[in-house]
Length: 265
Image (cartoon, rainbow, N blue to C red; front, side, top):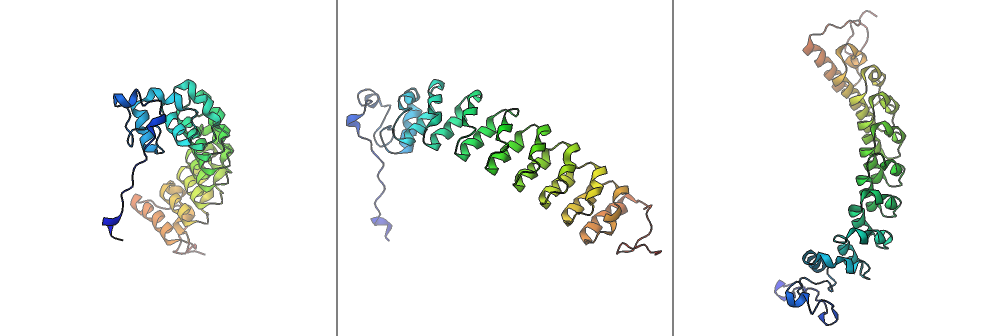
């Protein structure tokens, strides 16, 4: 199609004839049909209107058009926010989740919209966010896992979502990490292997995933490398042996061949 024949999209123009602002704002230049207009069915024009006239937002808290309410909610006074907590449109409630005072956020913990609950989980103080630890949506629980006090994370070590458990493994107190060393997902066990105390790390040297064993080979003390020096994976063996060679460490264990067998046997 020839672009010369494409008609430019005309901006939405509100009807000034029934507008309560035509006698003051229009004459004062604080609204402009087709550009800065609260009557237009255009989010951009409505946003410009409230940016210029924020004090008028309270008058539109109960407007029938959801986008007008949502944009007005960004500028509403605090006394007008709470009545909107049960607004039927989730976009309006998302704005409230950002703007409500912290002490009022409990009202939105059970909101049906995920984005509302994510914002609540991100804003609630750590001592109150635990109420969302069993939220049905993994993303909400992920935010909880990032913000919950480490000492309370033990309740999330069996979360059904892998990424949530990875976050838990990154923050769980060291004394509780052993509870996750047998997690079904290697990505979780890898995080455990990065942090677990050395005396418990030895219990992971037989992990079925070579990446977990490689991480242990990188961080275990030289005298605890043991079976990793003869690991079935060549990369793991190389990491462990290179560390020993660099340190000039003389093994106390029986001399073994490349396959981990005692040479004297």
